[in-house]
Length: 128
Image (tube, rainbow, N blue to C red; front, side, top):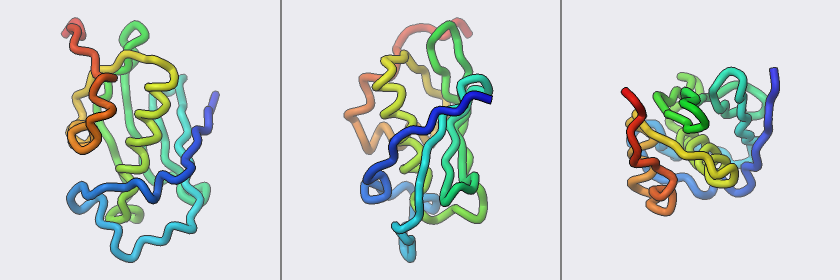
């Protein structure tokens, strides 16, 4: 499996409020956070101290990423990690200049709170 580690410098400090999934009360920022892209399996994974903590799943529709859902493992919920994962994914999509379509409500909320990522959304038809 091909893995591509992405930079997460400062991501923990950039978390935002996103309901129960991002309550950072008691969160410890000394953990090592890493977002890894698994292009062959079509998902991004968040690792916390090397342990799987969450993922964002997408389909590749002719070079356009169609994001479908986000999952944070139960043991890692309530720490703001979905925001960290989303920021890593969006930064990678932006860097790679990949068109994207979104059907994930978590990503919807992230982009709503972080409008600098809104231009990444492709308004074109997905062919559905």
